[in-house]
Image (cartoon, rainbow, N blue to C red; front, top):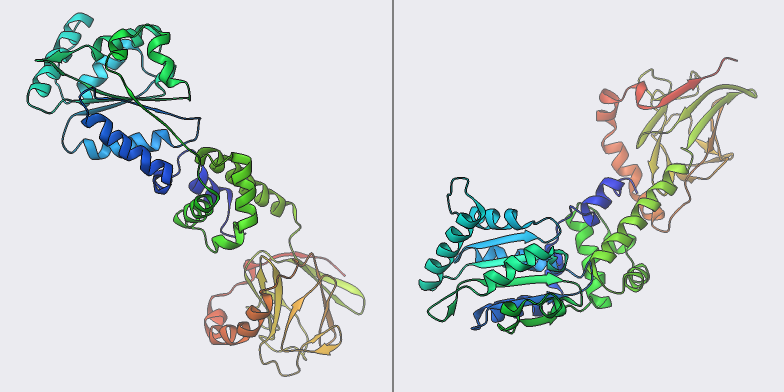
Length: 390
């Protein structure tokens, strides 16, 4: 999983990941249509409810970006908005320039602005995410705002999001002004399994990942969908955890290495830390074998996540693996490469995957094509060498 690192996992499924993909779900599309329709009605109040991770925040922010083209829109998080901050924040987001004022003056300024806009047919919109987390004084302010009107038309349109019991907010806190506007209510539904598969794979690709069907086959998607009960936010959490765990497991696997011997004596050990490793008599090789039967650039090791491939580079005296001459081979643990009077033993070779055979078939052509460039650019420090004295 060379590219599928924790950084990629966070980019695809972390808290700062792009949220727009959830909009493609059927429930989210219905929620967007609901918001548009609800704010076109005379009462102009919409409640969007659902569990954490159901996509409410993504939906209201997506719709807010469209509304802002036509009318003033202010967006707040109920977990962070105190009463004074809500009033001053609304004025700021609506573009009203005011010098520092007392609370009563700010409320009067806000009320005048809302009335002017409503009278022109462009009633502003207030969106409060996590509205069920508002404090009692802020709820009282919201109730006051809900009562503002001009010539029988409400001065402020309101969108609130919260948990499944958001619809009980008004009655629970005696918010009579909000209640008498008869808010429209929409409850979010989870993603279907089909939507979850598309969601997981698309997020992964958009974050820079490759072959999403391999990392997220249907059975894995099905398990993540089951654990998360279809809610996008929880799918993100479980997918992120799974990817990080996969990386951690990989990190515990020992790095493949080559042990060079002659006549039973260990000459050197090389940890294979790079994708390609040249073996040969030339000092520019990564693994230098000082043997007259070894060509200057004799063979190459190619390291994959799922296998180590040995390629003979048209050497003069050939390459043996386990006493059998070969042009290319996938190396397994404890395989012995024979070059002249030297023996190279591989340890910690990765397990071989099903697609490795096709890579072997193409590898020698690609390698020989780029050999001239390798001659110029490769240096011995590309492999970590731990030399042992005889």
